[in-house]
Every structure is written in C-alpha cells, then in structure tokens.
Image 1 (cartoon, rainbow, N blue to C red):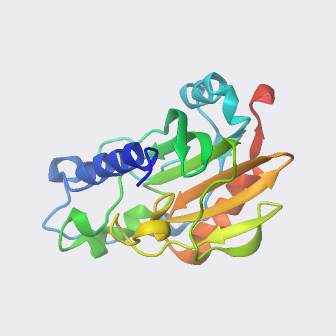
Image 2 (tube, helix red, strand yellow; image 1 turned 135 degrees about the vertical axis):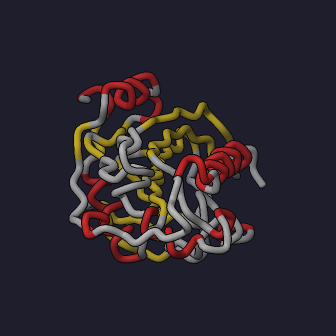
Length: 224
C-alpha cells in the first residue's frame, strides 16, 4: 500500500464512523423509507466560498469544479441538510507518480460497516444526502489505475473508466482498490497532465453520468 492510500483510508474510516452513529441519523425504529425527493434530478450549484477557497489555496491542482451537487435532505426532521466541505491533500507519492488532490464531501455513507440494516438506508448514498468527490492531479508521472478500467469518453475527455467494485472499503484488493473501490473512477490526460476524478457509487449508470457532468464543470483554478 502506498503512502497516499493511508490518509485516504483514514478519511473513509472517519466517514463510516459517522454513518453508524445513531445519534447523527436518529432514524425511528430502523424504518427509513426514501422520499420521492431523494430520486429527483441532480442539480449543480456554485461552490460555497469555503470550498472555493480550498481550491484557490491548492494551485498545484490546476483544475477545480465550478459547480457541484448540494444536499437537499437532512439526517433528521428539524435540521438542515449537511453542507459541502473541501479538504486539500499535499504532494504524495502513489506508485511511480507524485500527485496532489482535493476532496469534496457532505453527509456520510451507509455501507456494510454501518450495521446489518445498512441496505435499507442505502438510498441516503445518493446526492440528496451524501457526496464524496475527489480530484487528483499527477504533477509527475502517470497515476496507477485499476486493471478493470476500460477506455471511455467522460466529461468530454477520452480516458480510462474503472467501475466501483462494491460497497465499503473491503470491495477491492490490491490494484482493484486504487482511488477507493466504492467509487466510480476516471483517469484522463489534459494537455500534458494526468488527472483522476472519482465519485462514491450510488448506482453504476447514475454515478458515471454525474461524474461526467462534474468533470465538465472543471475549470482552471485561476479563473474561479
């Protein structure tokens, strides 16, 4: 395991620890039927100032999304939906490449580690409630990528698309787990640089489509 994967696993572990905290979700007697609003068309909104500031502080990323989804459903009645947060990662080595990244999140996922009834809450992994999007820029070298990747066109770029291989962190071993095995992952070359964008899976077709939309929203940081 490369040095880069360790902090990413720590982030994911933190997210799942939040997901299994009943006080954070406060669901009544385990019943959690999804409202129709959970399946509404996903809209994209300009980044809030705090997230945009993180982009501007990480110029080595070169690109950042102009717009992202926004949570519309709260954990419990009487509270507000979770707000988008961004976190920058410094230069790290991942295999033979050196890359920097930025992560955008709101909410928390429901996955196998969340408890035996996680599947009935899995609709909360949709953008109505949860988002985990990551963008990586290889400042040197070509990013290591899962062997399952296939050539694809996404967000207007030709590249390599790797599907999510399951839920939770135990869904991929070795190379299959690169950039989170529970994410749909896309690698492409833009000008002279390699980039990787990933999005937590909430359904293969829908996740891939939304990831493509987000990639189309990427802009040079200096223009944001």
